[in-house]
Image 1: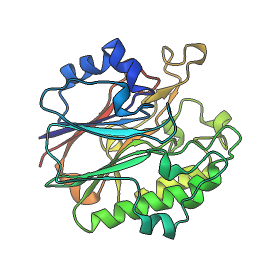
Image 2: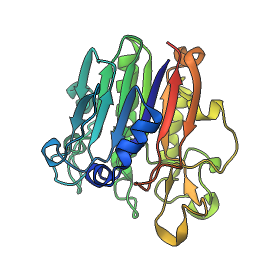
Image 3: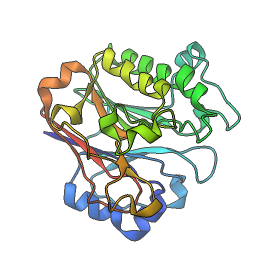
Length: 266
């Protein structure tokens, strides 16, 4: 069994300082833990984890974005960023906010049985000013990258995809329709993975609404469970028979997101 977890920590330094990351790892004992939005470079914090190798891909911009992989299973290879061929093919270049290729948004690690990809998808912004980059460039580029890796071995994709796929994935779908995280373009970008055969692992086990991974700080949203499911584990269909379970873990605090997980029998 391999236990893979993912967590948008919304700032790793605060999580480490509070002891929340150690508490989580002690309790869940992940074999592999993917982090998003670490908002720091390696020199700015220290995590003492016996038995884990640590791989980081921070943003160039201080205190912004960034992803990491902490793993007890030694990877065969680790790749940071999208390949230049994919960047060129989909014109994944800078916009008014900067270059997404310098924002520490995607990292892949190869293991014996699969490729693991962790991603922090660009936010479309309140005024949807980054929706074009996301819809026309980023989302199709990430899908193509996963398909490229999939030619070698099955893919496990996890992270903060910054979209609620269906109306079941957010507490208030009607008033949020067309707003960031729930536009038809963002949902189509997610659907493209499903159409290509990737499986939303959580939905293999849980149907209906009320299952969320992110909550606003406004008006006690988390306490009232007025949230969004925007953090996912998607896997190649070839791994379907290997999925033991998939989960969401809202009891872990320290971030406005909670961890998600998948357990694979490999």
